[in-house]
Figure: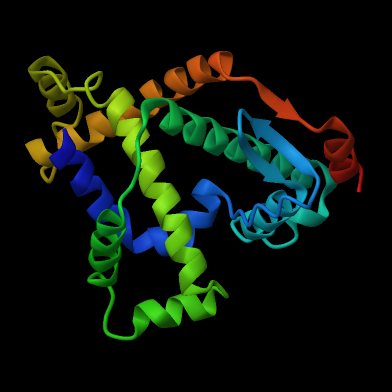
Length: 220
């Protein structure tokens, strides 16, 4: 299971650099700012939300954020991502999961190895993201991944029957070998399991939304 998750991370390493803020939010967590979301002792501020929102807008068609309905949909999606992040951080504390400096450095080396010399730094520069900030967010990302693996790793496996059914359904796809089929089945089951699991955690943890600030954001 760990080896499989490592392979998935290897494949994703090329997009982590650009996608990490969208996947985990971009949080400076200036505690002097008004909080927007709180889960236990984990807090995201209005400034955190605005930073994540600005980055999320770039993933949508040009001008989408100028449409009120589209903007509200984007805002809700970012709020959901932030809430899930805070839940996972709280779960990590409860499970006593930590990411060591050595693990962070190993992940950095792995990610950098996927880039030609100088391209990694160039990509950071073009994204207007400092190395220190990116490294901090990577550590959070790794922490969240460890929570997911610990919680879901033993629940998800691919049976011979599922593999046979996949090959039958994709009989005309000559490139669909066992490795590809296993990854596809596992990915689908992981997505389904994650959604069920995160809903369970949402019932376990209290998600506090600052309604005054949220209404100010959505009405602006």
